[in-house]
Image (cartoon, rainbow, N blue to C red; front, side, top):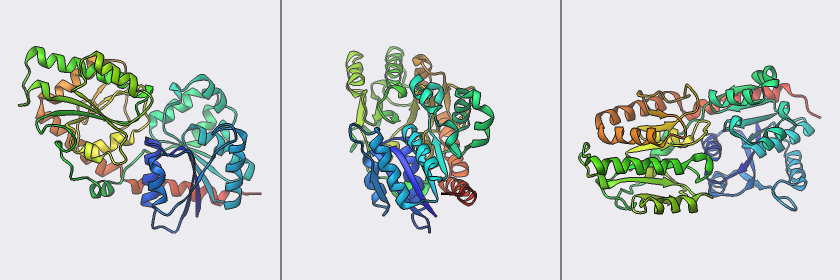
Length: 385
């Protein structure tokens, strides 16, 4: 089977990591994969190293003009894939037009909640909303948000949308854990490190996380809390990732007097050394689908703090394998940080729950099987020109 993947970007991100994980696990199969992208990034070389042919789609005036659509269509027409698989909004938008014009089935991934997207994107999405053969949502919350956003198409979207949770390759992670320790990464052995991995963009609300850390650190200093055997001045916040908000986040740490306590590690092709030194993992996003970074943190047995905009998280249960807080509440985030800092037994129990859950329910091989079941069914039933 020939599968043509179209993705908006190959930068560092959850959708990009999900595609890379999928391609890695299918490397030695009989299937042939192709990848087209609009924006290059660190994942491009990793995909090419798998022996997969890639295509950089560019336009005349910008990445998304009509010429780029024609280029993508011509490439797909020449290759004649059995199915098109797209990820991220713009790739989905173009791929549906191409697929319809060439009578090729298309499967579109949904990695984020449409409820939080802008008006223009929602208007454009309606143009070819029903042209996807299947939408694959990475979580139930993502699916529900998608259908709620376009509720006038509810019946049709219910039939077209399935949930295949993101997953990770634990064996690959174990093979690629670096031997780096805290000192080599610029920390002290006794530091209590709260970590976050993701793009420095507005939707991640890292300004909120930094303010929560400020409250947490001040509370420790004021109460002289020493409940985990470490002095309070050695709590650290480590942000792994790059993005447009770096400048303003850096300024915020200066304004709050946290320059020595908040570490901007930058974008990392391999974030696993950082997961290996974190004491807990934090998500402060306004909206998430099912974060690959979250699953990776769980695979390292880390306790998790996460915002959640839904009454029920797809993976995390408050007090069982995470501490959950409402978005936009830095005080609640700071209290969760203090709970993990002070209660090591609770922290370790949460981490064990997460590691067991990943092993049992989030294997990448399950994702692979689910996708190929869809691909084969569509390929067998769609009649082409």
